[in-house]
Image 1 (cartoon, rainbow, N blue to C red):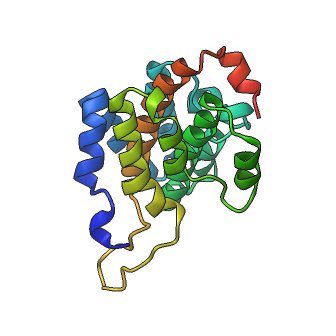
Image 2: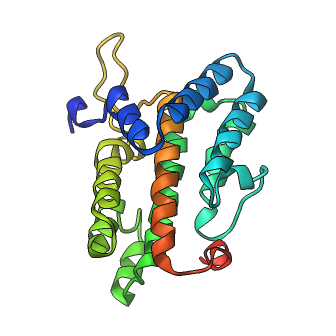
Length: 209
């Protein structure tokens, strides 16, 4: 997998702008700047203040505790800020945000017995495979953005690709914190749209396994 396959910063923020406008980009930048200043409490507060505006369930509901159901992954978005190393754990934030989408999509389409067995081994059914299983249920723009997120961002964050041996060049798996926050906001927007397709009450999603 080559470096050019990974989404650029410009591409990530362009996608975010299409979904949420410039305010989301500005928030991502402020979260990053505050973390670099080691003001993690203010950084997390900045993220949560915008997150609540998106509606649904997000990190702002976590309060430092693990949520249940499909929202469990949001704890791992918050954890790097609580642990005071968010700028070093941008990959973990991206993994958690996309892990929420994986859990959600499994609620959109019930897995068969064989699929459940496959999902129980190793890394389970990958997000790309899950998305193709529900493609006919998703609006084209949601499917296209989710496929882009998986192919151009998630796989690079999830797997330890590191071809960046040249001095001054970041390895493929590295993302800056503002990029990770942008990806989280993108996942939240996609998640809200997909949640509406489940026709399940949010309380049911909160307590699902």
